[in-house]
Image (cartoon, rainbow, N blue to C red; front, side, top):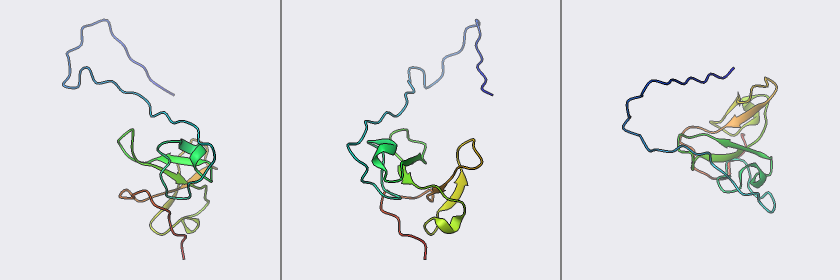
Amino acid sequence: MGVLACTREPVESSPNEGAVLTEHRTTPAARATQGLGQSCTVHGASECLSGVCLHTGADQDDGYFCSVTCKAAEECPEQWQCAQVYPNVAQRVCIPPSDWKAALAKPRG
């Protein structure tokens, strides 16, 4: 359930007044070429061979990586986790470590 609040009372200005939040928009890729761990910042999920692109950072224009679905951590690269990121409990994906830099991830083992 989402919550939205509004008021008719004047609101004090904040130090970030004038800052505008926008969503990160991608343009569709001609074809998928990026593997697990590689950047999908420009073309989003259409850029990933798996069709899964995750945003893992606070910067809205950085931290987008291709991932794959999984059922257990053993299906993900070393130091990656298999975690639920969608409301559907059946949908789990490999999540990179917080310091991950875009690169092709090596399979576990």
